[in-house]
Length: 333
Image 1: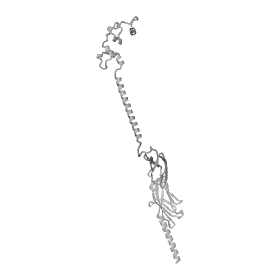
Image 2: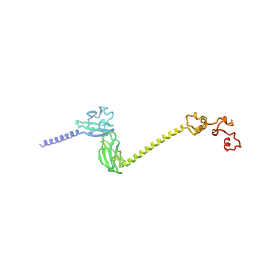
Image 3: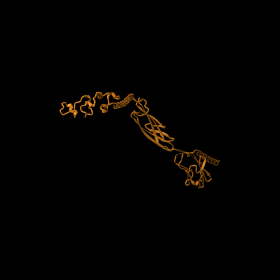
Image 4: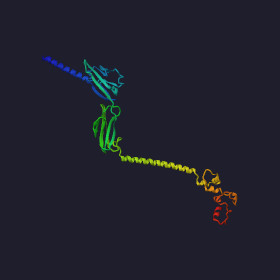
């Protein structure tokens, strides 16, 4: 009776161990890898205890080990990135890609022993690159504080979680807080996923001129001063342009008119007032209508009349040294 009980007890223990092993086989091993890394698929038993091993990906056998001989059944499955290792009876997938994510199985068999199947669930991720913090701040004049809205992000379409530390703590990519005027705060944003961790530090300061979103607006006196200065500046520019335009018009008109030198021009002297139609009457033209002819002059050697000839109808004879009038002496010379 005791022997039977002992046998039953041993059977129950073996059954329990088998159940535990069966349950363990059903729970896959979860592995996270970064793009570009390698996955080492190794067996759970030493080489001398193994007679046959199969490696499967999504239920497809892509490699086999049978009594010290390796075979690649689907060599194009991983685009030449598959390598075998006879020393420890393993297979390595190098330069992992996002498409390599999935379920791997290792079926192991020994001398008349069927070992449990090893299952691996692989997740391939992009590593986190640079971390950046975007800062949006607004000035609340009524309370004399700045409101900061910070957003932490990573480059690319990488799934990541975020944590804030330093002046303010929090979880998630967004963080909001207030600072009084001239106050500073240093914050750290840490981004991480299953294969990488990156962080960035930023220091912010509250200033009254900070922010594109000013809650209570710029003080009215500053707005009035700026507006008045702008109007005065525009008026000055318009005045300068108008003065320049008027000056140019007056200059053009003066250049088109007759100058005093044109009145004295010999050609204008020859013309009579009655023949002049373009310009106004000058003093010389008035006198010219009443000038005497050259043959009236006592001395025919004077062919060109002077201004004084026009005024004096009868000219004295040629000036001699004995002439009493000083004006005649000057004219003669």
